[in-house]
Every structure is written in structure tokens, then in C-alpha cells.
Length: 367
Image 1 (spheres, rainbow, N blue to C red):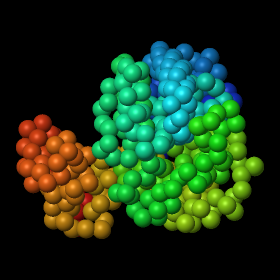
Image 2: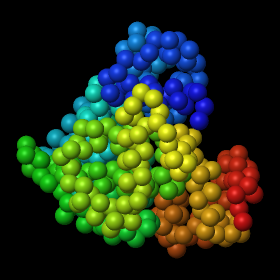
Image 3: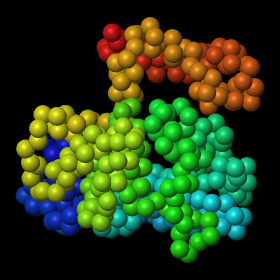
């Protein structure tokens, strides 16, 4: 672990625990490199708050923090307005992920958000699309996967989920969350708004994190979310229930190791001694970035198949993927062969850098 990574962890510890960083240590930090690393993990606002507590002003960090605060406010306002419309039209819904987690952080804006994630009644998808269009959103992707994507310039994004995990995911996840409604509790001040229990929110949060961790990876913000959730809710949680649900999802081992690592890393101003396995896990978080690395995804895929098998699957993806990737295949599945040819042409025409990177990665990690 290099000094910049250590500085990031230290300042995140300070931010979420209300601890003022040591002035001499902060003065020795390379704030330009620190900013780039914090940006790749979507934790600039949290770092900025820690720096400000030590009376350190840095313009890029300050701008990122103010932007995070503004965006959170705008997302909250839009979510409130749109969910009010859901209420009027009798569409059940439940906010997910960052919209819930950000309220547990010590200060407004500390937990950055990219978009509003909301689970809603899949039977009302067309009606929901009309609502989003009415509010000025552009429908970037609707009906192609288990979540629809809407965008309103310059900064408002919504991911509206018809399911928590689609049928392309491994069976434990898809089967467990196929009937999500059985886990939901109605909001006291709402007819159609729902929420998870604290335990079920944590289980879903862990499952969602595992999805990314086991693919391209996920950044240190996910580890920080785990720490903050445990710090605020931990003493009241039914850990026996959580462990059993994670066992059913085949992520009990990951949950325990991730939680123990988060507690070790963010509960003290000095990084404690970590086992070799913990060090490896922490570095995986620190080098992945918020949304993981494409190389990690390819490396995972190549662990269970040959180079030839991977390339063939890339050249001839299944129909479910093609329906998400090519609009006319989604509308007319029998045009799958034409979609394959179209996709090849598109890749050769506009994604040559991607293809070169894939070839290099396959050569490096393939069997």
C-alpha cells in the first residue's frame, strides 16, 4: 500500500468519525494525487470535510464537495416529486442504496451519489415511463434489463429497478430476490412507499456489493458504507438473521470478512496489522475504483474458461445480452444473427481501443 492510499484511508477515518486530522500529516500529503484517488472512489466530499476540519482549504476538493451537496439536494427534490406522483397513481416503490445510506453519514453531502435507485412495481413500467418523461427525463434504456435508466441534464440520473437481480444473475441471488415484496415493510406515512428492515437492507447492500466485488471489483466507498452502517445500526441488528440470509445467498463468508476488514480499517487513526488475506482484500478495494475495473472482470471470467471459450462468448453473446445491446434484436429476437453482425461492425468501427485492451487482457490472464 502506498502513501496516498494510506492518506485516503486516514482522512476517511477522520471524516466519518469526527476526528480532526493531524496538521503536520496533512501538510505532507500530495493533495493533487490524493484528489485523483478520492475521485476514482467517489469519496472526495468525505475527504474534503476531513481536510476542512484541519483548516486545510483545497479548491478541487472544495468544488467537489459543493457539487456533491448540490447534487444530493437536487436528487432528493426530484425523488420526492416523482415518488409523490407514484403515490397519486398507486404505484408501489422503494428507494435503494445511496438514497438510504447517505442519511447515515455524519454530514450532508459526505456520501456522494451518482443517481437515484428505486425499486418499483414492474407491472407499471409503461406508466412509470410516462411519469419520467412528464418530468423532463430522457429514457436512455427501458425494458432492456431489470432496471430502466433515465437522465435529465445536467446531473440528474435515475435507475428504476423492476427487480433487484435479473435472471442473468447466479441462481441464489435471482431466486432469493424473485419475490422481493415478501421482505418489504410499508412506510408509516405512505400508502405505496416501502422499505427494508435494517437487517434486510444490510443483506441486500452486501449482496449488491458482492455482485460488483466478484465481477470488476468495487471501490473503497463500499467498504466505508459497511463501516458507517455498522457504526450506526450495528448494536441493534439481528446478526443471526443476517448470517442465515447471507448463507442462503452463499455470501456469508464474504459478509464476515468484509465487515471485519471495514471495522479494522476505519475504526482507528492508525491502520492496524492486517492478515495477508485482509491486505489482499483491502488492495482489491483500493485499486478497483467505484465501479470496478474491466480487467478484473475479464480476469474473473478467464478463471473458469479457456481463452477460446471467452472469445467465443464475447463474439456470440446469448440472446438476453443481445436484447440489451441491440435495439432491433430486443424488438425482433429472430434477428439475432443480424444483430451479431451489426455488433461486430459497431465494435470494429467505434470500439477499437476496447478490442485492443481486451486482446491484451486475455493474453495476460488467459489459460
